[in-house]
Length: 319
View 1 (cartoon, rainbow, N blue to C red):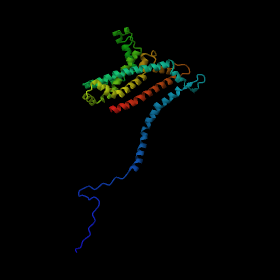
View 2 (view 1 turned 180 degrees about the vertical axis):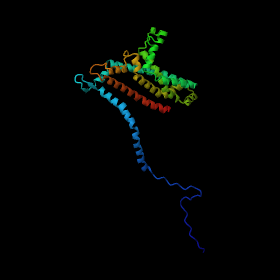
View 3 (view 1 turned 60 degrees about the horizontal axis):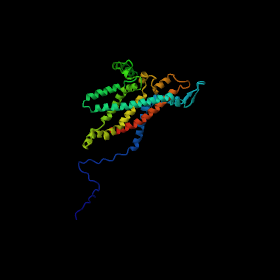
View 4 (view 1 turned 120 degrees about the vertical axis):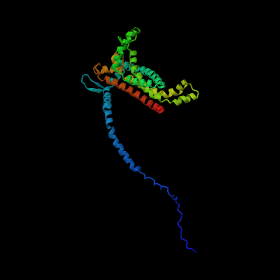
């Protein structure tokens, strides 16, 4: 019999093909070694934000702490010693000071409502306008007018609509009983810078409305009014409410315009705080201004607590 050479057993694994790339071995697990590197990178980021937190502590934390401490501290006029008490806070919420706080809230609510409605209508007219030049003019003018407030605005209104103002004498407004130095005059002055601010605020939300939504509603047989009632307004509601809250906070914190125009003739909390800081208080009530300031801060925090969720909800729909 011929000599038979033993043949090798067939391979059980995959047979390599000529020209094929060799299999790449799995990458080693480096998660254990990468964690310390990430923790080290995080430790290196902390020195970058330390100046920011230091700025917050000095410019916001220190004044806020001083205000809270002074609001609950009463000075004894005889011994000059200070003691903890709630007399300042209770005094700031009673009498003429409570009237000033209510007056500021009423003025802020009324002007915020008017600015929201008027500003939204103007912004919608700009968005739907086929002329881009009109949008540029309105946006530029709104950006300028939204920052034109304070004493210059008050002097401009006095020269225009005051007792001897140009428009007052030209149209004889004094015969109609109109007075710039009243609640109505303050509303007009506040709307001068709040309406442009509302236009700038609500324009991005109106731009976020998809044209496909209106087309889909029209294809389903919905009218323009039905589209706004069931789609447009519900989607815009968080943005509109957020803008209204912003308008309220802007009017509530305004001081210079009202101080120059009406002085102390209109009960406003900001003017009362300025008078108290100037020493126009009884002996032992030196810290009453800090208590009134604390009341304003509490209201501002409530405004922020309402505005932030509305902004997030609006960003989720229109972002």
